[in-house]
Image 1: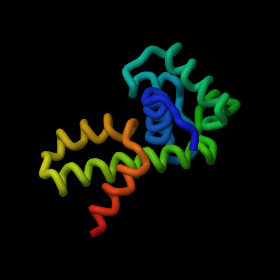
Image 2 (image 1 turned 90 degrees about the vertical axis):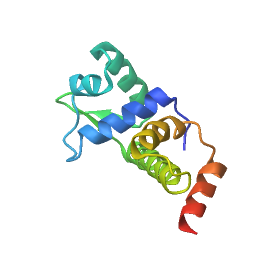
Image 3 (image 1 turned 120 degrees about the vertical axis):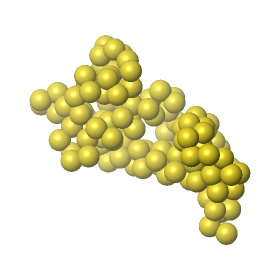
Image 4 (image 1 turned 180 degrees about the vertical axis):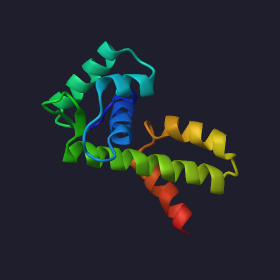
Length: 122
């Protein structure tokens, strides 16, 4: 799976969240969710289109491609595993764990991520 910046991963997560039924997400909704201006969201979507992670429909709605969906699933799995690890193993509160998991999910190595998951299953 290709490596993306944390910002680009946030866009993928936002599109995934805003498009649960597969009808697409509007640029204005993506921008609002991420707290950015529409031109910034448009540039990010253009980049993700070039990487074949999103498509723009005829009505200009944005949807994830199968590769984008796979990337979104991995991001969500990382977040969930890291948050659970912080809560269960380290005893961190839910709110702090949620914030830190969001930051850590972008930088954790595959080896550390795998070990966290293994410890939770043990």
